[in-house]
Length: 113
Length: 115
Image 1 (tube, rainbow over the protein chains, first blue to last red):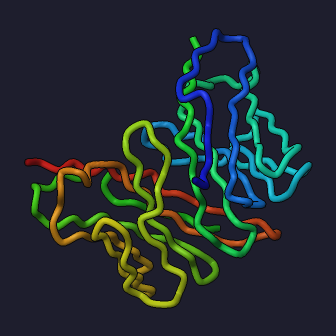
Image 2 (cartoon, rainbow over the protein chains, first blue to last red; image 1 turned 120 degrees about the vertical axis):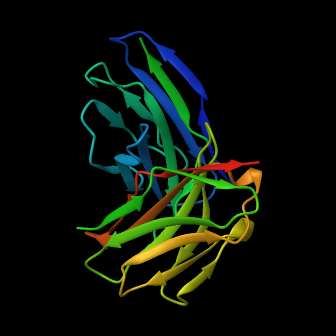
Image 3 (cartoon, rainbow over the protein chains, first blue to last red; image 1 turned 60 degrees about the vertical axis):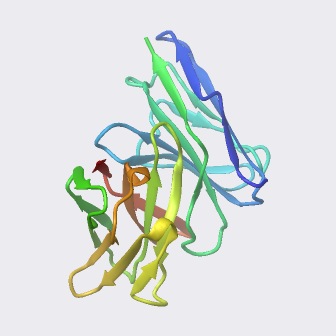
């Protein structure tokens, strides 16, 4: 089965701790994305990557970091600098061809207290 | 800059009634448009997409959408609502800039289906 996996489904952390969210895809897609979803705000782009070892900031990158060491993997670290990290995080991937739809993982709900 | 406006953050319909979810877009180039559905605590699933081939686009689960350039709209419809249609629906527009595909999502419309 091809798809995108995100783990864990639910994550709880104490304020001040960094936390890493996993995203893996076996769709052979070049592009991968991280979005943050908050009620009433839709999806906001955090980071994206089009090729291995390259990534770009999205609209709300402050307090987040990513890496792209393998085509299949695009982990997101939520750092202690992120002022309001509690949210639902979605990873997506797409072919690099122009304007294809994105394929989404099941999401990780992060709660920081 | 592209943008998407979804009118109505919450829509309620009776089971068996017409579903109409509104989406208006703004784009500097001919747009590619998408509708996604999200069930609680899950990721987004593509319902349908418009890529300029045909203005009336049919998707999964009986949904369809019509692209109207003169109205800059891409409204989602389904003739008869089922209980299983209760979910959140997102309209999105895609542009390419700097070699990167930027997708802008609307804020979403939660559909409630009343038995």
